[in-house]
Structures are given as C-alpha cells and as structure tokens.
Length: 92
Image 1 (cartoon, rainbow, N blue to C red):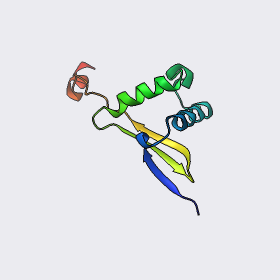
Image 2 (tube, rainbow, N blue to C red):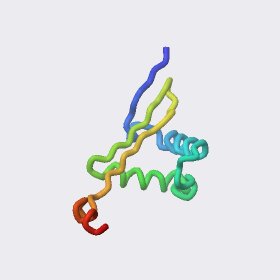
Image 3 (cartoon, one colour):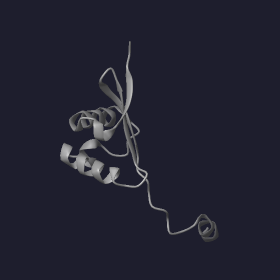
Image 4 (cartoon, rainbow, N blue to C red):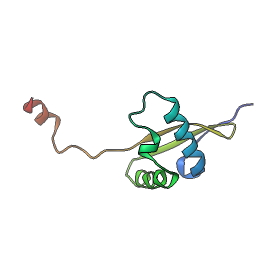
C-alpha cells in the first residue's frame, strides 16, 4: 500500500529538500533560473527558507510518497504595489 503525506518544510530533512529542489530544477524546462545560481549551497537555501517561513501567509509544503520526497509547493506572498489597479488603468 502506498502512503502519501503532505508535510511542512520544517518537518523535512534540509538535505532531502535540497536534493528535491535540485532534481526539480534540473529536470524542468519551466524554471527561470538554475539552482546553482539561486542556491549555490544548502546553507543559502536554508537562509532563503527561513526568510520565506517568516513571511505572513507564506506556505512551504512537500509531498512524500512511501517516505520519499517527490514534489514541493512554495507560496511567497508579495507586498501590495503602491499603485492601485485604478491608477494603473489611468496611467495607460
């Protein structure tokens, strides 16, 4: 029987998450940058994850199937623009 678990990043192995990030970045054409540029090492990824997890409403989850990390989801909230949608329409 297959066991699937959704976990918060804080309960995952940092090295396991880094390996998952590395796999996703190397096997996906949809990434804007490569992993080595964004996170040259595990410590830089950990620093960024600390920042992320301290943002209000941020989400960082990983999915595990049979104790193996298989995918992840991060949502990094952005601050509101100083311009409203109405001022954007007016400016065009």
